[in-house]
Image 1 (cartoon, rainbow, N blue to C red):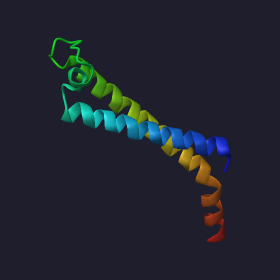
Image 2 (tube, helix red, strand yellow; image 1 turned 120 degrees about the vertical axis):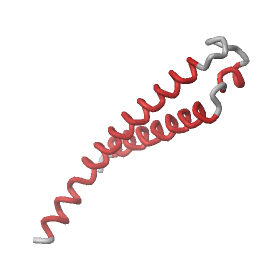
Image 3 (tube, rainbow, N blue to C red; image 1 turned 180 degrees about the horizontal axis):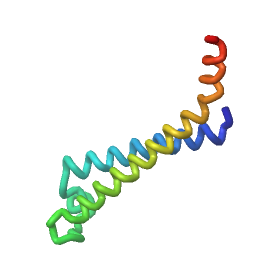
Image 4 (cartoon, rainbow, N blue to C red; image 1 turned 30 degrees about the horizontal axis):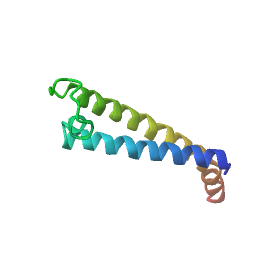
Length: 87
């Protein structure tokens, strides 16, 4: 397995974990921007937090898809060798 491919897979997995964490924080603490920054960019209606949650969900899904694709590419030679050995 190439080091670059492993590194890309690791980055994608970490990005997905971070995005899921941000999504969870947005859902659990709907006013986290006001709590952490002290400013209210949306005048307290939660619109920015919901957009952040949807963006985090999209990033997580994309990163997970890319990680799955890379994992399958990295393990394809092993799967082919295993299938060949079963014949």
